[in-house]
Image (spheres, rainbow, N blue to C red):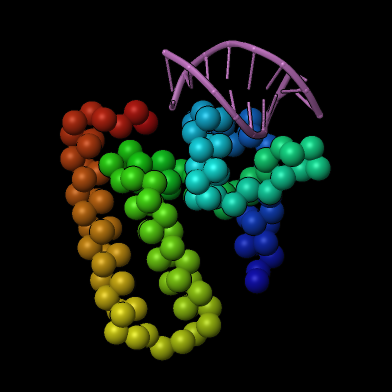
Length: 127
DNA sequence: TTTCTGACA
DNA sequence: TGTCAGGA
């Protein structure tokens, strides 16, 4: 693992910092955390600590939710990403099922981009 | 002061 | 999701 990835994985950001970085409420961040969508660490005093990688994930989760996905669906998307990465890391060949999953992801992504512009037209985007 | 959990609206 | 309580 490169040093760069290592730094991004370092959990050193407290709740207040993540709130500013994501412009989300602590309530929302804790909710994603409780749902197991992000894996924060804890200090000896039970305070949550997040990494820059976590911040990216949180923003991604929120985008999915804004686009109308449910928590369960976001979980599935993350699961696929995890499997995809594990597959890449182990450098295995692709099974037919893997190929189908890839295609499914691409279709989902295409649909997401379409919905994106749709939402923008409706003025639903705050940023 | 900041963050935590649980609970209610 | 916002917000309040009560504690660390």
